[in-house]
Image (tube, rainbow, N blue to C red):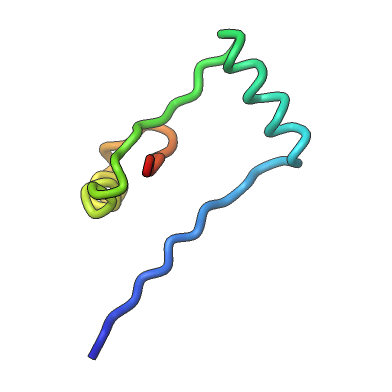
Length: 62
């Protein structure tokens, strides 16, 4: 029997607010709390999230 897991991201605010936030981050006006993981390390990212080891967001990078 196969077991499937669905990972769903969430968005807070509008797309225009997200765009504005990314522009501010690019200019160094805000610091985003995130930790990047290679796509191959997705399981480690999930474990770190469950264990409370990630401050902010866990981002999977292909």
